[in-house]
Length: 164
Image 1 (cartoon, helix red, strand yellow):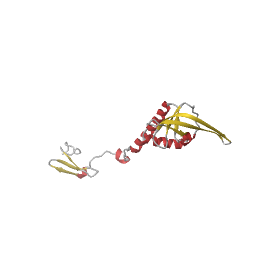
Image 2 (tube, helix red, strand yellow; image 1 turned 45 degrees about the vertical axis):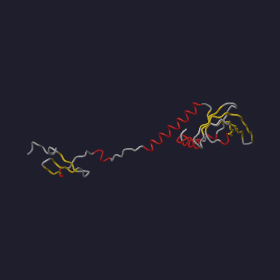
Image 3 (cartoon, one colour; image 1 turned 180 degrees about the horizontal axis):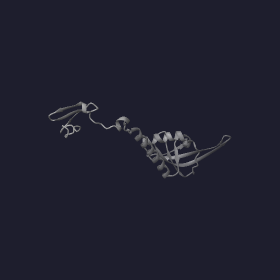
Image 4 (cartoon, helix red, strand yellow; image 1 turned 60 degrees about the vertical axis):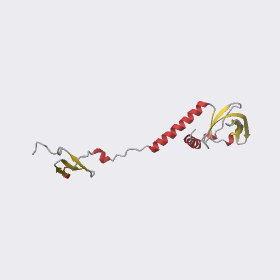
């Protein structure tokens, strides 16, 4: 999981409150976890379920066991995890793919430069002004509306060769 995915996942969790809902996991089963605090994905074994009933309602806490890359097992409570839980690998993949797609589109939208077209310049064609021309032996010098100077060889296109 890239940093971009992690950031998007973290923001989605804050907006949707997905990390606040009550889950029902089977003890002995596995769950996928995407952390909203740092860019990481874990695959936990559910080793314990703690159900608490009070006047305020019922709450569940799970104890997960994770195996570190060095092979040591560690336990963590679901109460300290602030990310998203999934029971199927495909759901994790789809979630991460959706987050990556949104992040990529967002980056592209921020980086995209829209062409700026001035309305009066787009509709009028650029023609050199006849009054700003100088005849020379090698062609006609024309000053364009934007101030540039151009040389027309073969004579002025505005002059009719039949009229002389």
